[in-house]
Length: 281
Image (cartoon, rainbow, N blue to C red):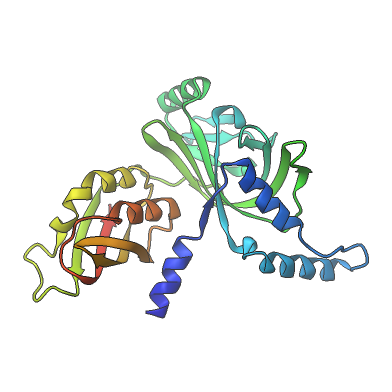
């Protein structure tokens, strides 16, 4: 049970960074460290890490930022490799243009794309409907800028990159900038079990999630790799409550969180504790 709790906590360690107040909160935490003028470099690094650990584990959090069309630029298109690069010559700009992000390896990011897709994405970018979603972990560097100037600059290490249009994810790359092959996955419910089941249902309980199938399919549209999820939940008044991700082979916090939200309140019947096994192929 302890392992399941720890896995659930790890999968939900993703925080949005979409508002000025959230940026200020993060930067205040990154700056909340002892003066290091009299410390040698090793001591300064140690003091910085200790300060970050004391401020709600900001150092261990992953942040998700949506960069609007005007906040990023494409680089060259390598037609022979069918790869479209990002332009890393300027910082990414998000949160109404007040946040500049220096993300390690932005020059190495590439997305799989056909010539037709490059044309379509370029058009969507001009119309403001194509966004870049970055999941990153802040580095130990202090934020530059101030709330008064409504301008901040932060550095970090990416965990994932995604191009998203009005219909969902169109391309993605991993934390090293390498393209993730494939496209949106098909989701299937493998089994849903409840403590109150006297015997296993004929369909392994799959039909219990039929009411939230549209929401689950929308989650699947965001997935760029195959894998499986196991979620645990409590049943109160016949509905799933407080779903938590217990096992996650997708390694995609956005999709895992989406599935957990879809399960919240689902009419599953029964009582006690339940588990749902879901796969994406």
